[in-house]
Image (cartoon, helix red, strand yellow):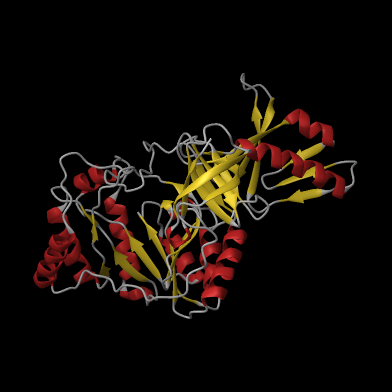
Length: 414
């Protein structure tokens, strides 16, 4: 009897609506946080079968034939993939999807010609921060989420670093959302760290999903730095800023204490990186810097910036950059600790295969994050296209309106 086993898929037979027996669908979970359904009758057409958590076992059929037919069901079902966190449609980007990992700002790999490279394995977030620059979270206006196959992401990153040939590369796992929602996060850290050009691997997280075990697993996998987005140490204010009553700063402080405890003889560096939102957490910023000074961890204070498509609190005025740096200098003098992080060095940047203003004809392969938006593919780059309506699957004429750092945006010409 052929037994098909899967690392990143889990299966569950759903009961009928009355709860009296097996229903007509099988729920398939991908990478723990995404799911789709396949029909029970479609499974029966392949043959008699037994369903386990991570396997399907068929009877009376050749293994190669069973695998081929079942994989077709998976390929069809995954077209209706959804994010379990918010029930939004999701796109699974894998090596056979035809979607490049260079070109998008919100999935894949972002390289700005420096020693810092960003890796974005998924979108979506478990918090609802009031200042979120990319409007992630439960109340976000994004209509489609993305999740990337781990092996594909690592392979494409390795190709990029072979081109850059710098041994000073720092890889920041910094998605539009929360990286710890990615089921393969520990494996991703391990595989990235094994790339010969990588000097450091860091994760930027809100910390809500951290546990002592996960900290240990990530450190063992090779994680060098954890950037923790803590915006207040006060219980009430931290919940207001996080946009959810579920946020527990007490739990996160315990994790911070665990990471910095001398007993661990730690190798993992902790950087506490609050966003300074004027009028919202002014007092908290100084408290965080003083806390880090005592705990022996670094502080990386970020400036709140209003974004057109972000989530901007009412009655909050953005500081200008000179004013922000003056405030940091004053804070440094008061706390005795420099809150700034050293900037990256320069490295070669991948050539851009097209330029702003150029018109190209490319196929729209999937929806984008917002309505009337899609992702097109041209010359091994992904392009975020505005104004494409419901033309997914069609070739369209696109005018490039932005092409900086191999991140491409275009508008549909009809």
